[in-house]
Image 1 (cartoon, helix red, strand yellow):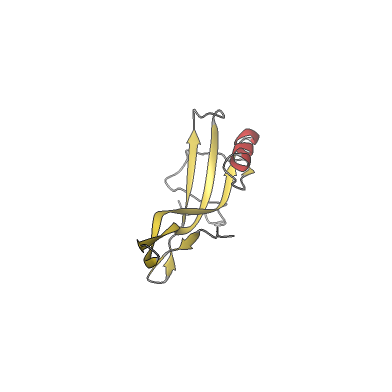
Image 2 (cartoon, one colour):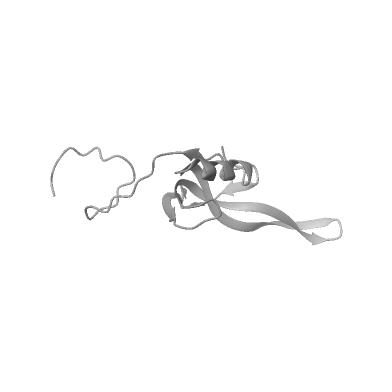
Length: 115
């Protein structure tokens, strides 16, 4: 669910999303890995611009990525995401494999061995 303070931005009618994987060797909650699916670029918050009681314009205060799914590799990281940041993270088994020449985001459904 998109936060009410965020406005989904688009370019030529398309939202701008993606994914990011982070591996924290050192953090306040210890080492952990994080995977985030980014739903799109959003404008966060608005401020009214004008003099006295006359509002001339509303301006967006910032731009950021809106994460639709957040997975972390440890329970303590999930607890901090939910209780401190208010982000609905969930624990998942996240593993990096340094094999091959391609980065795959999710299961590989290709049964062909066309190396």
